[in-house]
Structure formats: C-alpha cells, structure tokens
Image (cartoon, rainbow, N blue to C red; front, top):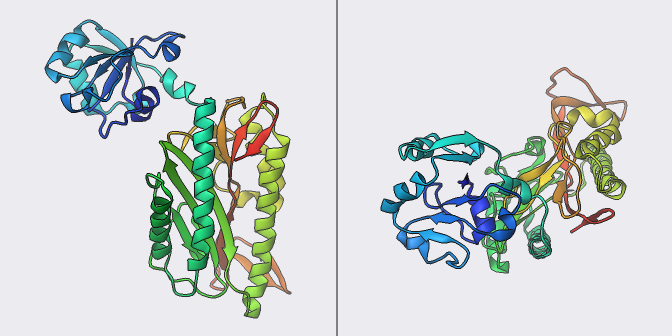
Length: 353
C-alpha cells in the first residue's frame, strides 16, 4: 500500500484539495491498476468526510479510528518529497514502517487527459486576456506592485480562482532578476517591462511571460532599446523554433541543449532551465532541463521559456555598439528578458495553447 500525502495528488484523485498535509491522507494499492480503479481508503476528519465519493473510497472520517486503519498496514511506501518530519513521526507512532518511494500518482499526472487539457487551454486563454487588459495600466509612475495587484484583480474578475503565485512584474534593472518580487519601483520612459503571470482556473494552472519597452525618446535609451529588440526577437525565435522542431519520443534534455546553442553568444546569460510541466501545480514534471532524463510524450503540457539576464556592468557601449565584459562598471546597462509559451505535446508535434 502507498500513503499519499501530496495535496495535489489528492486533488487529482478526488477533486478535494486539503489545506494542510495532515488534513487528508489516502491509502491506495501500489500497483499498475490503482489509477484506473480509483480505490483506496480516505483518512480525513468529520468536516471533510462528506466531500468524498463513498462509492469509490472507504471513508474514515473519525481520527480516533485512524490507528485501527493503520494497524492493518504495518508497512507503507510514501513519497519523501511530501512527507514532513512531524507527519512522519505521527504516523510512526501507529507502528507503521515507512518506505520512501516516489509517488506513482505524481508521475501519472505528467500525461494529461482530454478533460485536463481543455481546462489548461481555458486557463491559458484567460491568462492571455488578463495580459491584454493590463497593458493600458502601464503608464509612467505606476509601480511594479500596483501592476501586480491589478493583474490579480483582473484575474478574479474574469473568473479565475486566483493566481497560483503572485505575478512577477519587473521594470528596467529589476528585469535582470529572473524571479523578481514586485516593489514600489515606478515605471519611467525608456524602461523595459517583464511580466510573468499565472492563474488557476477550475483547479488547473496557466503560465506566460511577455516583455515590452516603454517609449523611445532619448538617444542612449534608443541604443539600449536596439539591444532589447535584438534579444527579445532572439528569444521569440528560439521558443518557436524549439516548438516546431521537437517531436514526441525526443529527450527533453535535447530541447534545453538546442535552446542554449541557438542563444549563441548570449547563452551564458541564460541562467535557468528551459521550462517545466504545468497542471494542477504551476511547476511540475516534466522538467525541461539538460539534467532531465525524461522523454517527450503525447499529452504532456509544459512551458518553453528561454531568458537572457544581463547583470550590472556586463553591458557597455563602445563605438556605437553594445559589448559585454566581465568588469563591473557604473556605465553598464542592466536588463533581462524572457519569452514564455505554454505548449501541448500532441501525437506528432508541439502545439501552443
């Protein structure tokens, strides 16, 4: 038997999302048929017991009876990535011996069902609408924090249950930080803007990143804008080239490798992996990284998101041309850019959703 403690796995199986890892646990047969049978024992409390389908599960809604249930299964496998020390110690007080094993449920979630794919499509369509609606708010002196809060309001107004994480909104020098937290930094003419936004609709996430530049007036900023145009066009080309090139059966590590090759002289400024799976969780398998041994399979949904981030002092203009160097400089420019699409691995190719 396998002990399921991952709240996303529990939601995947039952449609009920626990709010803490001790609220709901599931015991399920550890074999190839367990996903299809949807059988198992749900350990919960009286408040949540009515939420489960009693035709599919044996419901134990009285915590006083948990010990009796655990006594039937003195040995259980469980995923160490979703087992807190407190929870482990509590379960072991029932005399249970736990064996650490990756969750087969988490692995099975990599391949989406047609119903899940439709939910993810709808979530991403909503995400794109929010992006279009936020653009008019990008005016001088609005802050990163104000835009981030406005994005979340727009998401809720369109019917999302909320963001999977607060959005990343970065202006100018802050765009060089891949996972920047919005601040009170105000938008100014000539700034580069990066918006990475996600939301949850009907239990499923979406994810996209876009960049743009505000105005083009001063000569020095026009020069910087020229480099931004070059970088952002390159990132868009890399993304769409990967999408058109990749096919099922290919190692996902090959996608990351090809993206880095296409970035050429800017490859060293690409400081994260190429992408990740999206589903119930905003970040889940497959992990699109050179270190991954996973294979592209039909039904996967994932992101392709190359980025380039120039730290301060690494850009300097010399004879009307931007060059990179390793010496810090107060004259150095600083910005970053990322372009992200969410894609479905279809039977024969990748499709943007």
